[in-house]
Image 1 (cartoon, rainbow, N blue to C red):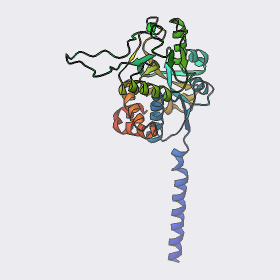
Image 2 (cartoon, rainbow, N blue to C red):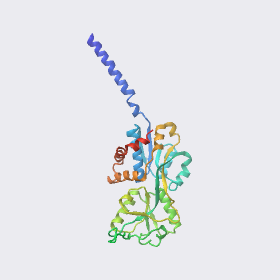
Image 3 (spheres, rainbow, N blue to C red):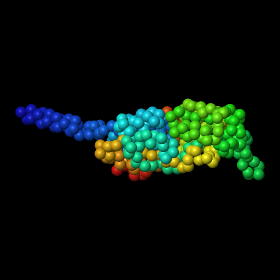
Image 4 (cartoon, rainbow, N blue to C red):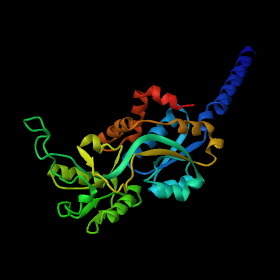
Length: 305
């Protein structure tokens, strides 16, 4: 009889434990899934994977990310198909997207300040960077301004190497080509990868090349580059990268909304994560974001409500 009571009590204890596991353990698993959208530019790959890593590893949410083009990124958030993006370049680069979708989203403000877009050329010398006197040798590309591109059109092969056609920097480049009378130039479309590959080849061979560029970007840490002067100010001045969320997120997921509002870092910090990602050929951005969390624990904890 004693053995039977013992077995019954054990069964009740096991049943209670199973109940606790069923009702307590899934609390994290049952939390809402946060959906982020982004464009596959180095800066947005870095920031979006970092936000995903913090949401999942530090806050217990599931997080899905979807790579799209720039306009689709804005549209998905505006229509509530995505919860947020952390790659809105303002006030200039994505100005036309904000005009179109701005009243259907909530702009939480900058998560990074000091960004810039424009046309970029190598600032590299043919030989040593400095002469025996200690003065810097002249770079092999003479152009200093967008206004000079028409003068050197043959050396640049009548081409500006661009990225995906929907990018804001591409729209601004078309405006610049018109403003500076670069009618004999062709703006090549492609991707960030094809652009940086062409840049690398040109620098290796000391060939003339002009590309669409922006900071922060790992290429400025890898090579000596310079923005061409823009006397007509087509590309504008300093920009910032903003966090934009769907309307209603603050009511549906207040903790997530507060974290996204708190998220803020510097171009140098983003540059570090971009270099880590690029050093692995871009293969493991999420793992590199986890590395950033481990090495910047105090900063990351300050973002979490």
